[in-house]
Length: 190
Image (cartoon, rainbow, N blue to C red):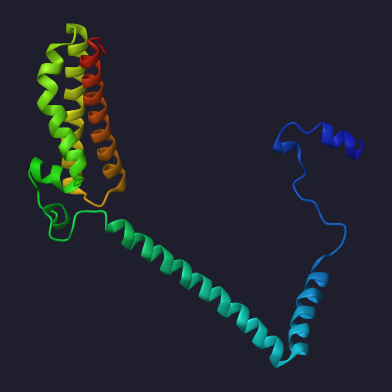
């Protein structure tokens, strides 16, 4: 059986040979190369050692710079969280209103949300019953999601995923309210 036939007839790992000896001993060449490098560094003398120490210093400096960048990034990221004096940062169980104001601090958002909620009743009345039911179901789902996320954030205020989900939920609520306003202004359903 030729080598090619042996390669073609391998169908499982069991068909492979258990041990294969290399055609030549590689260790003497590896040892010579290692010894050659050490000899080359010794031949360079103190200048070569200084150059090698400088390279090591640059590696340590780069590592320190990376750690500093990560620390600054974490510090900047934490500045978006509620302050140290807030109930969320202290780990207490804040009320729903406190949680809402701790996470939604943009005055423009608050003003728009108040206006949309104030007009919601009359806008819903102008919608067809099927559209009104869809809107009410969507808003109920969003409110439930907000409550659950705010509760979870009360237990783990530093969780970035929960924070992002809560922001997305606020945005979803604003989208639904804006769609209701536009649909009632146009006199059409959603």
